[in-house]
Length: 638
Ligand code: RUQ
Ligand code: CUA
Ligand code: CA
View 1 (cartoon, rainbow, N blue to C red):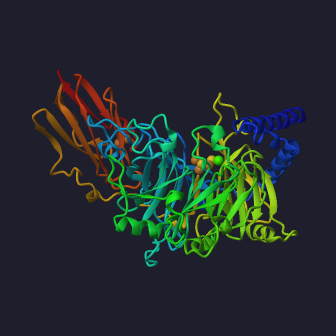
View 2 (cartoon, rainbow, N blue to C red):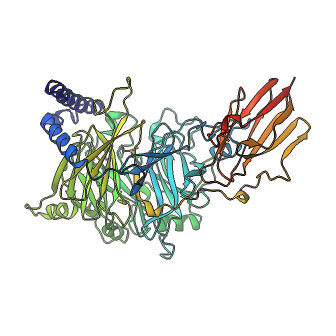
View 3 (tube, helix red, strand yellow):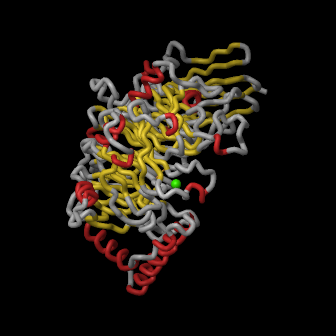
C-alpha cells in the first residue's frame, strides 16, 4: 500500500470505528452515548495492524498440514453449525441443522425431514432457524467427543449433532418458550457424582409470553412469563421447566452438576426498551438442580395447557426461604449479556453490557446461600471490576485470566480474576486490567481453546466480530463478519489472523483435535431401510411405488426406472461403495430432488410423480472418471 492509500485506509478505519461506536450507542438511547468517544481509536488501530503483521508467521498451517484444533461454531440466522480448523481458519464442514441444504439433501430426504419435523402434509414445519450457541457434551469436566448441542432462537428448538459423523440426529421443540437463546449441557449429575458426564441440557427462554400462548392475556404483558427448560441429553425429551421472573439470556453450568445459571437483562419484566433499562441492577438467576428434580419427583408441579412437561415455580415470591428455594437471583451489573464458568470451577462471570463491569460470583457462596448460610444473594459476589464499555462475553485461559469482549470499545480486555477479587476486598494496588487489544470491529462472542473445560490451555482466543467493513474486499452491501484469531499463549495478546465468516456466527468452542474421533464409512446395517441386492428393484402397491436403488461408481443399479403419472414415488438409495470419501449424489430434474449418500449410507425421498416425461436421474457428486455418465432414465408415463 502506498502512503496515500495507507492514510486513506487508516482514516476510514478510524471513521468506521467512530461510526460504529455511535450507532451502537444509539441503540441504548443515551445510556452509553456519552461513554463511547473516550479513546484514540486511530492510533490504537495502527498499532494492532503492525503487531499482527509481525505475529502472523509461525501460525500458518502449510499445505498438507493439519490444524491443531477444531472450532465448532454457530451461524446465527443462516441456521447451520460449522466446523473449522484452527489456527488456519479453514472451513471443514457446514453442518445443516435448522436450514435446508441441497448439497447433502438436508430438508429434502425423508430421514432429515423426520428429524426437522413435518406438518400433516409431510412438508417441513419450519424452514428457518437462528443458531447462537454450540456446546459439547462433557465427561470428567472436559469434552467426551460424543455430541454437540445447538439452539434455534426463532422456533425454540434444541438440536444435537453427533460428533462422529458431524450430522444432526435429533431436534426437539421446547413448549411454551419463545426466544430460546442460551443453552448449556450439564457436566455432572447433581446427586450422583459417579455420573460425571452430560445427561441434561439446560435451555434459557429469553422472551416472556402468555402461558399458554393461545390468545389469552395479549394486552397484559404483566401476566406473561419465561421458562427455563431441562432436556434429557440422551433421549432429547423435555424433563422439566422452571418459571422465573424476568428473562433468560445465556446459560452456564457448574462442574459439580449442582448449579445452572442464566443472566437476565430484563428483571423489570418490561415489554419495552426503556422499561428493560429502568433498574440499576439486573440479575444472574441460579437454579438448584437437585431441589428442582425433587419437587418434580414429589409431584409438586403444574403443567401448562397443551404440554405435559412438569413446571415448577422459580419466581422470587415463591422462593423466599433459601433453605427450600430452587432459585437465587444474584444482583449483577445493568442489562448483562453473557455468563461464563471459569475453568477452575469456582466462579461464574456475568458481564454488564450497560455497566462497564463484570460481576464475579463465587459458586461456593451460592451453595452456601441455598444452605441458608449467606445473608443476601448479593453476598455471593466476590468481584466487580470495571473492565470497559459494553462487556459481553468472557473466555478463560486456565491461568487465572479472563478475556471479555467489549462491544462498544471494540476491544478484547484481558483481566485477572484473583486481582479483581483482591481489589473488591480493598486492595488498591491490585492490577486487574492486564491488556486491551483492538478487534475489528465490535466483538460479540469470544471463546478460547478448550476454555469451557477444565483443560483450558490458554493458546488461542477467537473474537467473533459483528462488523468487518474495511478488513476484506467489498462484496456489496453485506460484508462478511471478521473472526479474529488471537494468540493468548504469551504475556501479550497477538492478533494473528482475520478470517471471514458468512453471517453470522455467535458463540463457538475450540476443541483439541485428539478429542474428535470421526467415522468415515457408515455401517450399512445402521440403516433399517438399506437396499441390498436381494431387495433392490421396483415395487408397486396401488399407486405407491418404491424404487430401491444401489450405487456403485459409476452406476446406479437400475438404468431405467418407469412409473406412472400420479404415483407416489419413494426412492431409497444405498451407496455400496466402501471407499473413503466416495459419495454419490442423486438429483432428479424438475422434481426438486437432490441429496448425497456417503459410503454405505442409505437415504430416501418421497414425492408425487405429477408430470410426465423423461428425466435423467443423475449423480451430482464427483465420484469417478465416469461420473458424468452416472445416470438413469426416470420415465413418467402420462
Ligand atoms: S449471544 S453476541 Cu446470541 Cu451468545 Cu452474545
Ligand atoms: Cu456417482 Cu458421481
Ligand atoms: Ca434491565
